[in-house]
Image (cartoon, rainbow, N blue to C red; front, top):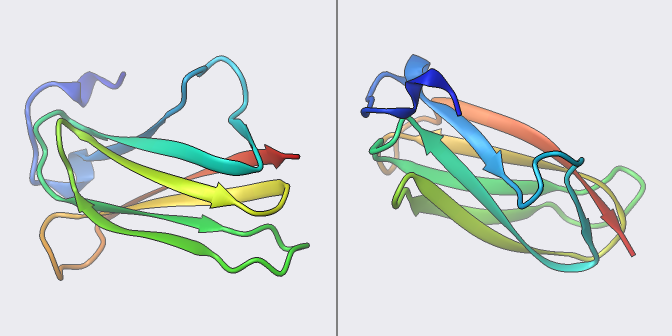
Length: 115
């Protein structure tokens, strides 16, 4: 956990988005079907909203999936995606400090989906 985990911030340069998977010692992976992704917003007690976007692998005809902006609660946002096809999906988290403001922080991870 970054040193900035304590306190709260309205300064976007201090805000970090971190993906929370059950096993942080192994590459992120899932099988076809529903999979919950949790994004931690640090420092703790930072208000705002986060949305997640799952970008389909290039070799599929799948549409990107969007989980709409959700209010940060207990420094987390959670979204369930149902991945229709295997491959490496790109998951992007976007933070905004208040509704209808610009996205000020983004974070990207890759998730391998198997059959």
